[in-house]
Image (cartoon, rainbow, N blue to C red):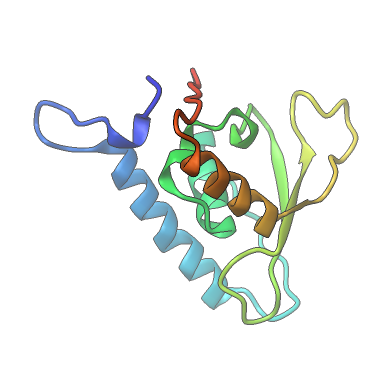
Length: 132
């Protein structure tokens, strides 16, 4: 499935859209309830973690198919959010199956958003698929 965010069941329910809406609510609540320089740990299933990461970075729905954002079993991502901010300024994998026990490099949220803006403007933007 190359565009999971647009999948619709026979009942009319769009499960990935519902997940992304839920993730946005989770992210907003985390921003409200985490003290200025505080730390919050989120433990959830990979799909929700991926969706929350997307919303934290301000990424479009199509980012859901990006393999780079896939939470493998026991993966841990670290996000930095400016005090009072509504989006993370940067993020990195602290642990994933590919990290070999070492934190990954910090990635700028602005650069992540730019990457999706660039792909959107290509005449034939590449489609990625992810199988969970």
